[in-house]
Length: 166
Image (cartoon, rainbow, N blue to C red; front, side):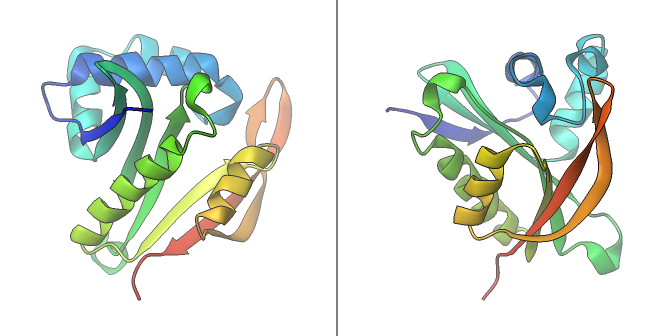
């Protein structure tokens, strides 16, 4: 597998739009947002979301095949924490190690920015994702009952945390 991972910049709005909408359409039950939430956003909102927080994309040749973002806490006493968001890998590359490579890029970036703790929420029904995060040293620290409504029913979210400093 020949892939490259890079941090997107302000000129990468179309790449961001392409992989984000692909993720939301391919795995609608994996995200709190729906494709409809994002499809009609104006270009300036796409650009704001891309540049306000780091977004990493994996490419196979020139095609985006995975995405992972980071939302840093803004309050000064919480700025050492960030939330991993928008996690998606194209179905054909699952199990290839690509998610691990994306997470490593996000983690390295986070450390370089002084972040000490990564956090995320994952659907309690997404056993594969929970297993991946556990392998990557995330610990389940809580549960949000009815964290999301999917297809008219409430589904719990699992809160997971990983310290990234020694």
